[in-house]
Image (cartoon, rainbow, N blue to C red; front, top):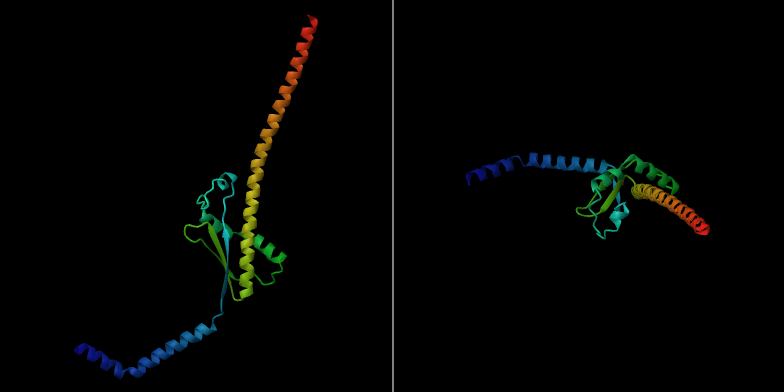
Length: 186
């Protein structure tokens, strides 16, 4: 109990010093807080679906075969940035890409959140949309490339099968003609 009285006595003696320190700290925090440029954040959510047809037809709505960490890195890649610039210029975005891009994946979901922070709310909205659209365009191109590659393989198999069929038909016609000649000689 004696220690508590000693502390209270010290606080009473130094109360103006303590009040001054608190006021200076609060004033400094308010000054620096008001001097900072306000930042606005806009986010777009994209559902990530598998690229391969074999994965799409499995019927599992939560496909964890897609590496969401890889998709996060892809969303911030230079390829997606280039597509975002193209999309932004085609859609009349005049603000510069001077903000910061971030991605996030909510746990156990195939959802990719693409966020953009900028000092202007319209700039944040426009560039978040541009990066999301750039990511979607990149994924579409990847899917198209995969399907084209698979199609080329099937086209080759079809061509080989047609060649074999034509050869078999030709052999059948030749055998039929030869059989007809043999039966006419008898």
